[in-house]
Image 1 (cartoon, rainbow, N blue to C red):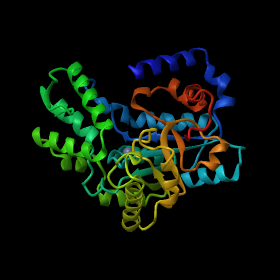
Image 2 (image 1 turned 180 degrees about the vertical axis):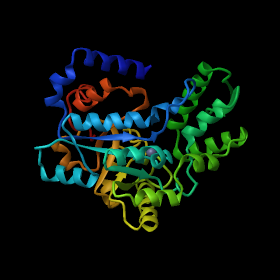
Image 3 (image 1 turned 90 degrees about the vertical axis):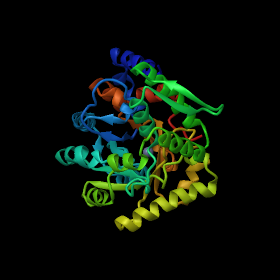
Image 4 (image 1 turned 30 degrees about the horizontal axis):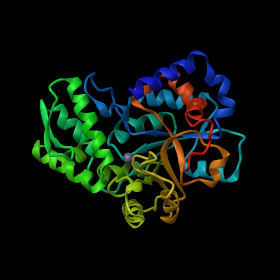
Length: 348
Ligand SMILES: [Zn+2]
């Protein structure tokens, strides 16, 4: 529903070409794009995590549209240097991918190579070793494979019908919202219990979807690639004690440093929304030793972000918006400045 409303708003903006009118005000100094999976399009039907996927063709279109709009695509090091120096003669963009999906190596890397486009992958250290709990994908797969599922929303176990796509969507949305709302340890315990009850193998899912250590080393050694940190277990930082948050940040970076031979300078908050990365957490990312930290708060980079390098906004290249019209709008910055009621900084 929210997706549909947002899309209608975007279509209206595009119809009146408000992106062109507003761009000089809204586009700022640059933009950081968020991606997750890059892979061929999935068949139509129940696929709630489809928003995390774009096709290799769309990635290529996005890179070219970014350059055509006058942005230079740079590394995160360079983006930080430009924000710090205050130079504003040339707009810039950074392409980032979260979580370390195997398709980044198989499908995204060839496009980045062909386009000579630098990119950054944020990796939770549990993921390449096979210990990652990709609960959002597990929930989708379990529901996709059953006509009904059992789950405890807090008032005892109940049965959710999921015989068709509409029922599957409804069951997914209900259980997903619950898992995002509860405590992080309770969330993981709940998905483990659900996986066990429905004969689903969480470790096999991680091994299937995520680059293993050898693959991570391969992509990390590529001259276009930077590796960033993304905690150990992909827990929402804002829901942890400050001590536990620092352990997640530092231990994830330690593992990457040991495994890849270079300490990551950049960090991405898991989930990255205000409920997962709050005002308390930005100084923690600095304390953990990172030069920058990104959220998923939507917005462009402005010169003012120079003083907020650990609360950087991003723009998601979302599977639901794989269209040149939306790229034009995203590159203008107009929808985000409107959504933020004209505020360039969202750091509270
Ligand atoms: Zn993530």
